[in-house]
Image 1 (cartoon, rainbow, N blue to C red):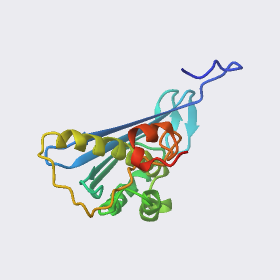
Image 2: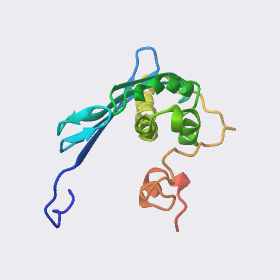
Image 3: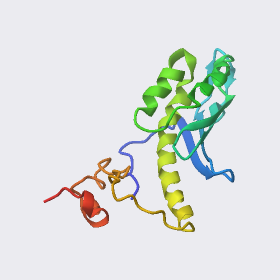
Length: 191
């Protein structure tokens, strides 16, 4: 169900499109790609670009983050095609500092330490949070698909069960939710 109708007439001002995709590579690695595009619905004057027409891009920036099976960044590419100031893209090489970091708890803190502030670009940096989410949405699910063709691995009877990633992360995956009770009864903590 979409949002309700607006309560007053409105004038469009700004549009931001964010596209994120995940890919399984033939070499067994994973590419997570993001693109952010901003446009104004009106013409405006920019000190760096002069007159910018309504609908022209304000930002158009791309990321390709390549991960291995441990969610470690093994390659990084950032490209800025449209940006407000001539020096914005000077930070593109700095994103190589993310190679070797692991996507997981504390990810955004580590990203900001490496490429935050004057060492990066706010628009690119803010995409790394949702890109991590895309990785966690795509990789484990597709791994299960790939594993369907593999013989089952022997189970270690001494291994402790790992908490599923989504568990406790939202209303549906709360420890006391009916979803957890049905799908993961061993983790259920309700009445």
